[in-house]
Amino acid sequence: MSISRDLVNEDPVPHSPLLAVLLLRHGVVLRFRDRLPEAAAALREALTLHTADPRLRAIAASQLGRVLTRSGDRAGGLEAYGRAVAAIPAVAVRSIDRWDRELGLAVLAGIGPDAAAAAVGAGDARHAVELLEQARATLLAESIAERRVDRPPASPGQRLGGGAPSASRAKAAARPRRERAGRPAGTSRPGTASTSVTTRFQDLTGPAADGVIVVVNVSHIRCDALLITSDQDGPGVRVLPLGFTYDDAVAQCEVFFAALVEAKRYGATLAERRAAWRTMTTVLAWLWQHVGSPVMRDIDRVADPGARRLADRADDDPPHTGTPHRVWWCPTGPMAMLPLHACGAAPGTGTGESVLDRAVSSVIPSVTALAHARRTAAAMPERPQSSLVVSVPDPRGGAAALEVLDRETVRIPALLPDPLTLQGRKAKKKRVLREMESRSLLHFACHCVTDPARPSAGRLVLHDHQKDPLTVLDVSRARLARTELVCLTACSTADSNTIVIDESVHVAGAFLAAGVPHVIGTLWPMTDNRNSHIAPAVYASLADGTGRLRVRDAARALRTHVRGLRDTFPDNPALWANYIHLGP
Image (cartoon, rainbow, N blue to C red; front, side):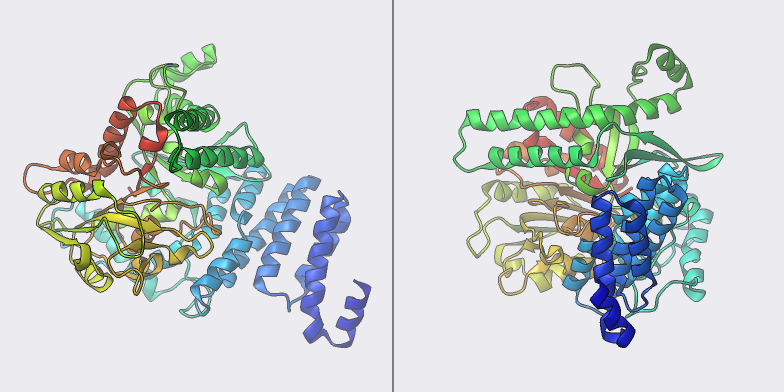
């Protein structure tokens, strides 16, 4: 350290970055040794060096926030975390390669949840939501900001499905044009920092008007559920402390996915599979005990004051009315990998003791993404629907043939309006991208390949995937202004287990980024089993009798059929806990 300081004094330009790195590492070591005042001094000094790159400044500020929070200086810790979050966009500048951007964000994983936890500890839950929105799903937020003017507003005489009154929609549609004309200070130009969207709490929470957004914030500092609601008094957020630690969540993830691998292992005996299913069920029960049940109990109490008073006296769950709540789960960190929407007590322990029984659930990458999906759905005119069915059950390149997809593809077109089917060698990337742009409903029945180290290189396996793959990045750049719903009957299309776990860089997230309001995806590999493929049943229940699908009811339809699958195969969560809905 002394040598580095001498070098900086002699020639600061080449040596200041080295000193900043050394100061950062020195501060971290001091933190681990509980020498907190010295650690804070070293980290503050690192932040004073203007030659330090944005990534190092973000890390140093977050480490300083952790030190100050641990020292009891909550205000100072929150201010330091705010500096860390503010530095994140400069790490993901659009002038660099996409993979480099993802690598830069991977190093900063956890800053958003830690910053939110510091804000909750300081008594500012609204600011906690704002910090999370600034720090997470930044690549998705960038796509949203760029597309907010893509869709033309509907004419006053058009009837829109699932939207607000036409005057409100016209006002909402005009807002993006005004914002683009007078771009707010701090919003970067193309080619520089990542484009930002609004992160003011009052602007984020409109989508919770008919339900509850539950941000499950998992941090090294503390773990909480932030329940966001909107009513006649305006938006609000309730903090529900959760009784587990970050390490507990990681441990449950490891147990769950080790069991899933065993359940899916080729050659596993029925006894081995059943043992794996029991382990997965145990994790779902843990999730229910520590997240699902406390959240449902809190929602019940607020929704029914009489039940709340009864529960306060009895110190027990209020009675469930039978009407499911509308809930959007927004998990962070390791919770993004687990099926919160499907958690519940072990089979046979009581009725209504699961999220599937108590709520219509969707999973969202961020509150910003939900707000965007709501605006998009409200701005869509009710035009004649058309569909695209892409089926590649037996691709080139050694991927296993999926016989059930062949049978599914025979049934699907008859359930969709004006279908075009691209099957086998007809399903090539350029043709699929071209046809997607003019279709209301997209159904993919194929393999999906994820790439944890390069998430945007994940791909849907089409006929020409070896030469010209349809990647996550390709999908996110598509212009899908007409598309209302995408159903992905493919493996792991919503798998967040990548180096950027809080960025939702997967196929399902890419369709959200491309402007599709409703997406049905999967958290892990599907089974080549007719019982696990519920798309035909979902489509049939969405039909309105006029040749159209009620896309706005996609989450409810999916819940109905997943519950049916669970009731038929309660001991096999690998079969039914896989499906999720993303969107409003």
